[in-house]
Image (cartoon, rainbow, N blue to C red):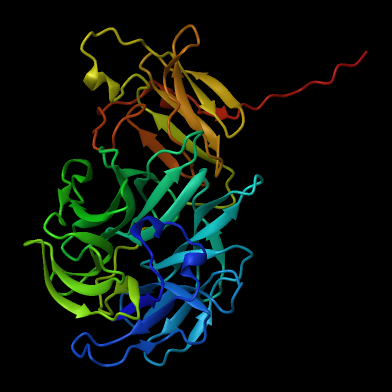
Length: 436
């Protein structure tokens, strides 16, 4: 069993912020059947180490670390049998929260510095064999705590960057960054997502922080994420800081009781919603992350449709007037949109008229985030703008309508827009030089 232990207090509100609070942390290993034995530090060669993640065969571990004080955080991989390690990333930015992909590559969050001095986090994938690195997310905002679902897709906490930042969403995408969409968002404003991970039984456990910075554990189902949330921690008081599956369908949690300074390791029964036993507790340490060294079924390997040499991608909207807002309209007087405007980071990328059935077929520049808003016949906004959308090179994506959930099944028909060539965004304009 591997845990990250350190001698400073880290509250759940800090878990999505990788800063100086992590300095001096270490990763330790111990046998839970003999908890009185000493902790074995496996990162003595590092000034700081955090975010341990175990391979599916339980033979290796990836983690982020600072070799020396003041160093940038980089990604390392370690063999658990002999504790030999190697550095994977070698970048000019901090790298955090690595996790294994089904093909043994590693996904992680990397700090992106903006022109105004602020920082965001994008997801990158690295091959441990040759250290080749690929960026897979490009939308403004931050992508944190990426984990792999049993179906091979990634789930990640995403806070998109608008003029006013909204609450984090749980996003899902393929490991190449394609088919990104929202998977879950808590409709209650007092909860904010911290992390998410799928358990052995298929349920997805969420850590959510309240406005009072109290972290709670809840679960959602894979098949119905938006309509299945259950509170799993109503019977215990304090902060649940991390959660990881155990082989008996109970879970390993880092938990800090009320009025206690240090967080310890506990076994938690999510069915009875009770603490089963204390696994390890030490007044000299507080634990903020723990993972079980157990073999797990390798998720599915999803083939990639990305072709880096391609410069564009395709987007089909079946009906821009089909929207979630229709469900809440009781007057029947909704305005009809006749066109969409594609908004880039700094300017409009173009306005496109919809077909008579409301369909729109676009060819967009790949890895260039955009938002969409619908317009009426007078050019006034009907709905929007949407959240940020990004398409990878050669990606083909389709949606039912605008601002709709991912549970909606489209009508089985051929949209008029696909009977024509896609409209290129940004529009290509040929400038003719005028000669006298």
